[in-house]
Image (cartoon, rainbow, N blue to C red; front, side, top):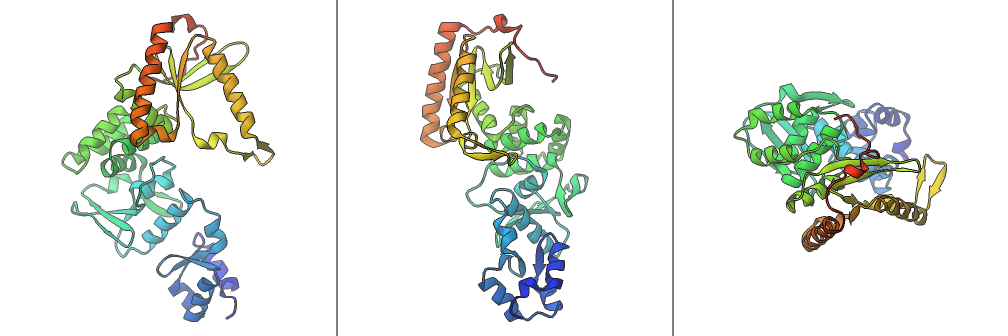
Length: 339
């Protein structure tokens, strides 16, 4: 068959299986092994895992941070011989929980059984004593729920990753008591101390991974109390700031904010315009006798982190010396949101 990827039965099978077709399904439809090889060699099909294929057009249309990991997790889950659930980072993609990208991304699956894990062919298979209370179905696959997923990420990847995941889960409505309930049976599991620390440091109002990590930087400096999503408003404009300590604001600037992009497919956002609007916003905020520090991703890691810690400490001390710490004079401007 010259164009197996255009065979109506093949297209129907893919459409009914989230774009995936297996080698067995293809052969059952009457295609030959050579037809499969021809489709892969021509670039019409992409091999997601051995014996599992998707159309090149579908693969290229998926983003590498969420879309492709979700598809890879689905394929790995479909290929399991025993009952597994998608878990950890892989479940986070299905649950819209933010995570820190790992140097060696893996597909994570968990099944009920003794506490033993192994990595093979890019899949980390976890085994856990407690599984059933946390199972749910999302988009046709079995995943561990958001509370269990966030806690597992903290145990697996450490404090920073755990705070990011738990913040994200809480922002999406996961209750604090549900997170503690997920931790409760793990009292002797690896990484449980880190998971508890991440939960204690979490904040339900953090709106991005960058904000979570910037808050941890302030915690490392011993500054506090820290208010997230500090908002003020007057008759001219309003602004919501990522973090506030005393009269000092801390803003995290992600790269995406300054990229040229479409907005609702109607107009283009000019980065120069974004920078100009951000300057006007900052000038307005500082006009109320507030200080400010700005952080970017590079400030949160490695040698740049040490420099960022020194800079923020210096800028905060300057704000305190010039303006004090009380914001009582701004009480009429501060917008208070329900806890």
